[in-house]
Length: 323
Image 1 (cartoon, rainbow, N blue to C red):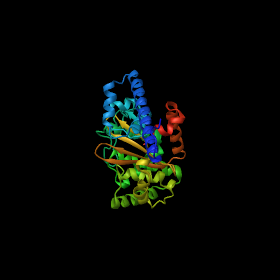
Image 2 (spheres, rainbow, N blue to C red; image 1 turned 90 degrees about the horizontal axis):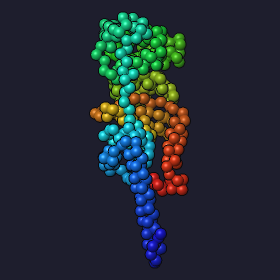
Image 3 (cartoon, rainbow, N blue to C red; image 1 turned 180 degrees about the vertical axis):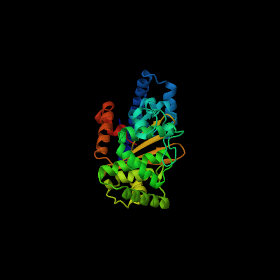
Image 4 (cartoon, rainbow, N blue to C red; image 1 turned 120 degrees about the vertical axis):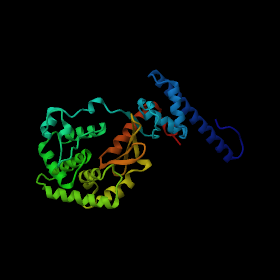
């Protein structure tokens, strides 16, 4: 396919141009095939090309691989997806917006069934006027994390009272702190946890953190800090040094776009299997968590390779997605 005679460098340059044109033609052909597949699933041509227009800053190769790895539901959103990684779309199921009025909550909180707003801690009605996401958080912590464990809940009530908790999300963070610390040390004393919690909060008051709330940072540090080799007094390393190691562009592996156009982006540091999540509500980006997830990169790479290999002949794969 290389044309012309004469200077070797000219021939080589011509061959390179021909090869790049061939690669681009194959890529465009694959995008056309994807369009036909999406159309058969009910995605209109207008929607498909609107997606392409929003991502015209990407190379053809980036767009192609992104299309192969993303959920069809992402076409519902106008939020730009992350290139060359898994992209998904999510809504909060109605089942998660539970009213927290079952008899197990009533028994645990010491209230009449259906009267979650009556619960108070040291005079604070923590569950009054909750937003949906707070309700989801409460349900996840009480039902899934501690499984209505009264011992953990009552321990957390005492700790929360001593540290001056005044809202539901902070209370949930304290419950999570208690749960993970008791699991590590069943003989844990309230005074010990109160001191460790306050020490961490004092550090964060001075240095700040990119978590949604300082109490959230303390909970995640208490649960996962030791996984990175941090001592109990080294929360500064967890909230300042560690994010710079995990949250880099090359570490992005998945982005979830939510129905409200907020996004949750997963990162994996492939050398250490350090896993982290950032949440972007459109006006502020915050850290959700950071922990060690053994085998995370290997699992991600295997899943991605399987998808790509299913649509691309191995002989073409390296050239197919080249930059």
